[in-house]
Image (cartoon, rainbow, N blue to C red; front, side):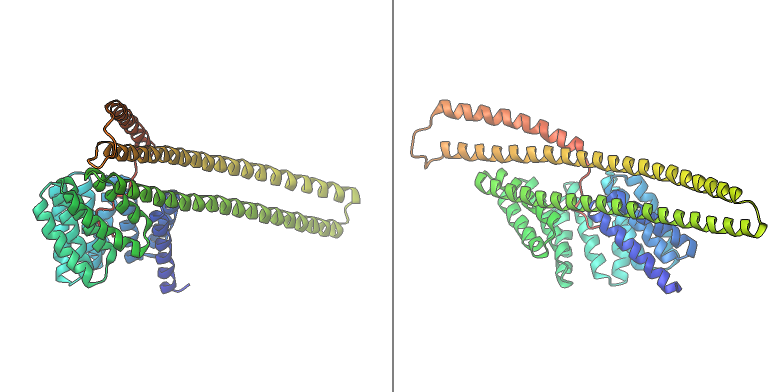
Length: 415
């Protein structure tokens, strides 16, 4: 394989690992990254090694291992600087800024986002300029400096529009919506979340669509519109179920593929051992014929050789079978954990849906357009059920969070 061919192969490895990582197949992505790192080091491909380190930083950031992520970003930054790859340097500065933000070190975060913005402007890199502006705005939002945040979001939106980056544009709309939601300006929050949902729907990015429906549900609930809150909550739940089913299908396919590969490998090894036995028998017969040894000795040697090979083969296959069974048990246990998490999440969603329904009933009981007088006893009972359900909902939400503490932070733009 030529040098160019080797570099393309490594790039494809990194692309494959990134696809697995973004599909939340973390345990499958990591070995591919490690293999790409190993080959890049052996061949001295600094450009590919810099990218591997950057992507490993994103991987560990998604695992909430921010200090480890910073270590990989530092390795990547050093290589990009050696190669004078300013676009790579800009992206790494951006990701370092996000890591420090997630660690709560906002001054360091702003410093690195500022460095990213400076280089992006010098090289007229519109995409990275927009990304840096959005991320600076996000830092200010988290610090409750909303006016400053809105200035940066507005600048980022114009640049995202200029390069038809609908995902980046929609993320800015979402972040603006969060400002208005947190400041109790619910109608404005709903408008911005709706814009974000419209753009994400056009791109069919399910995780972003789910996030937009969740935010709209919260905004409508806060605004007292129980019917629309319930509608968007159901859409959020439906999208969440779609993502779960996709992930489950991928997991089952992966288990089946591993089983098929291991089965095929075992069969190939059996065939190889049989060929070795046959070759050994032929060689032994030839030697005995040349030396003129007795037939009994020939038969004895053949039997001993056959027994030895068969014994070793059985031992190795038994060991492989035990390893395969252990791996399958690990996969089944992981599947049970995922299913448990799903059941808790599903319970949480069903109870939230019930709470929205109760809110809708209360609004009809107490509304000015109600055709019958308010039954105070009934209303008191409904309030008691609502209060009890709220407490139970918080308990279930805590269990669900404990089962799966990882969650994608889609508010920043990583690269």
